[in-house]
Length: 425
Image 1 (cartoon, rainbow, N blue to C red):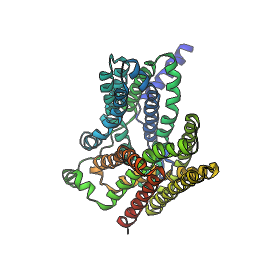
Image 2: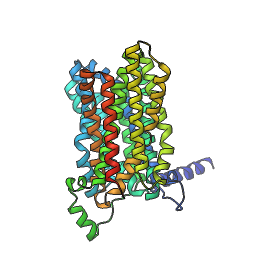
Image 3: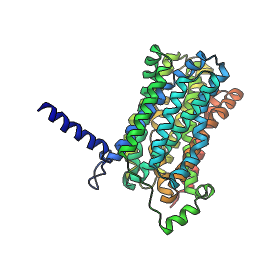
Image 4: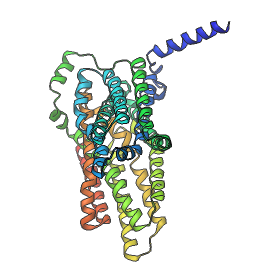
């Protein structure tokens, strides 16, 4: 009897595993009840947890392989460079080959890159393995955004992409903690664990997801044939959304991770532990803001209210941090409470940009160009991610951190102005 029950349970599990993820049952059902959305967001959580697990271990393993500081920097940067280089090719492949092959192949490539990282015999092969892992991450995460834009109704697209953004934030936040514990056992162990998670994501995508690439019609074939990158970027509203996306990454990578870190440590005396706690609190505020921001993105038709309001609010927060830092430098009496208030405003003001901008960009491009359009959009963000720290660092060296913060605030206001003008109805 027990054996029969076990066989029945096993058969039910096999059927459930092989069955494609279910769709929304009703028009007004919440997006998280769509099995396809849950499957992709779950894999995103798995992938980004894996990325976070490896993050604290990359410098450790590179050092054990005899790498110098420059080699460690190369190992850290190749992952991001792979993403920047492959965004557009991945988008083109999503439009031509389909979404599912890239979701499966990207997860497999990411797993292979992390396994090769664990097995690397020297610093050069380790950096090459990190590039492979970055290429897999670019293929999966870029296509996941396209896939979710396909399955989401326009009235729910902000919330669907917001769920994926929340999964990404959770994975990036939790992963480093798990990686630190794993490194206590072996510095190579976390990379093997990440490879296993990537393989699990690939199997799950293969078994649970259906292909969503739109069927080719004469009209869509014509759109696809004219879908060159410059044609996508020539659309003024789309270009303004891409600029706002680049500004968002500049506010986070160049503003928070560079200038805010400098001000907190040099002017307000934050220790590394206190700085980590500050950034953790900001990440938590960003995560908590994803839900309300996603809801606003779906409910407010005119995205200028959300995007421009967030960019101007961010500029005000950045200027407040600059003012408090300048006051502390001139008076020699740092106002910790005012500093924390300005930082809190900064964290809250950028929360709405994460889900709103990708959803709006997906609305602007035709279905036949969705892969290419979102690839160009992601590349704009990566340009801000790579370029802002260098530009703001040069400004800070020449004129001081408060002046660099003022320049960042000005760029945010300019981006808001461009979005407001180019999206007039």
